[in-house]
Amino acid sequence: MPPIQIIIKRTLISLLLGLVFGVVLNEITFMFLRDTARPPKVVELVIPNGTAEKVARGETPPTIPDSMAFVIGDTLLVKNEDIVDHELGPLWIPAGTSASLHLDTVQSYALTCSFEPGRYFGLDVHEALTFGTRLYGILYAGIPLGGLLALYSLVMPVKKKEEK
Image 1 (tube, helix red, strand yellow):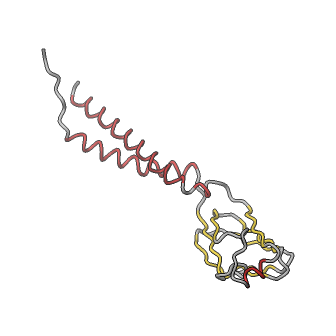
Image 2: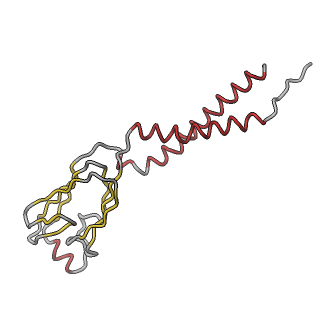
Image 3: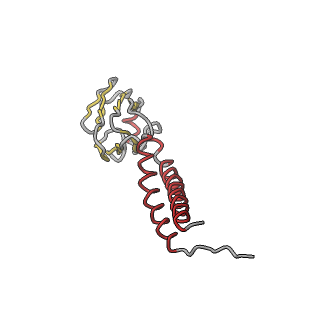
């Protein structure tokens, strides 16, 4: 095979290997982010009746998570089914009512909270994981790696076929 064909073949194989590695690496990473692979929606958080009593005893209500993950554009709807008024950051939620908080910025919040024994509630807002984001991650990792593999393949000697 002429040398230019060997170089082209090695380069294409190297780019393919880099892209395969990019797919594997990024898909493993994206598995941990699958909660954010969705369009924005209304996320409901219900404060059950008797929550204030449990918090006063230092207990965590079983239906309320310690923290929650959101995507940009989500709306947190807090329904207060307790007989006591509650607070979550800027929201004041009188007994028997609901309030909402629109989340439009990537940020980690630690909000003051009256329905958690620790008096704070964590909210993490992420960018939504889209097909475009995934493709960008694969290409961003795979193409440079493939290029490096192609460069390294150029210094590898060409195996000569033995003549009979």
